[in-house]
Structure formats: C-alpha cells, structure tokens
Length: 127
Image 1: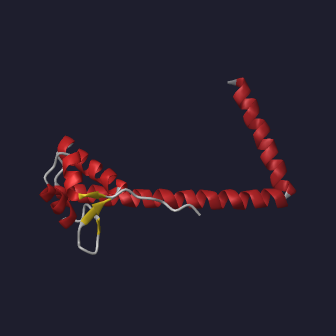
Image 2: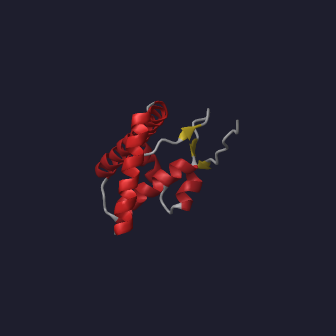
Image 3: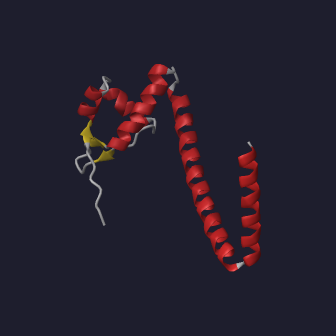
C-alpha cells in the first residue's frame, strides 16, 4: 500500500503565497471556513487541499463579493453536493453489478437486451 505524502505550509507562507494578511487566515479558521492541522505546539499547517479550499474562498470573496456567511453556505452546499455525487456513483455501481449478475443468470433478459440493442442500432443508422 502506497503511503500518501502531504506538503504542509505555515500560516506565514500561505499568507505570502496568496497576498493576504495572516489575520485573514485566522478569521477564516475562526469562522470554520478553513481547518488547518495543528502541531503539538499549536502551529497551524495548511495542506494542498486546504490551499484549494482557500483559493475557492478567495474567488468567492474577491471576485464575486460574497461575504463570509454566504461563503459558509456555499461551502456547505458544495460539500453536500460532493457527498450526494459520491452516493449516486455508489448507487450506479450497485445497479451495474446487479444488472450484470441478472444478465448472466437470465436468458430472457439477454434476449431483451439484444433486441433493444438491435433496435437502437437501426435507429442510429437511419439518423
């Protein structure tokens, strides 16, 4: 199993990279928009994933003029959408597995699928 390696950035480095004040990053953390990891000495460390989230926050804030409350709502909705997409993907995979098993077991299903496939091919050729 391959172990993932992460790059970590301190608050000063991130502030410089994005031309923002460190206090802005602290505010984003206080508001729950960012959640950097902490060392035992309580130093904040930002990962590449945190930086992606920060870039999204800054786009909403700087480019679109969204306030912090709006950013929070958008981030929550984005997370819910991503979670729903993952659930839908799992459902699709489940249905595909079930259909593949049924297709293998039932000759009737095979004939229906083959008939439908032929009809679709005929319709496509006519187009």
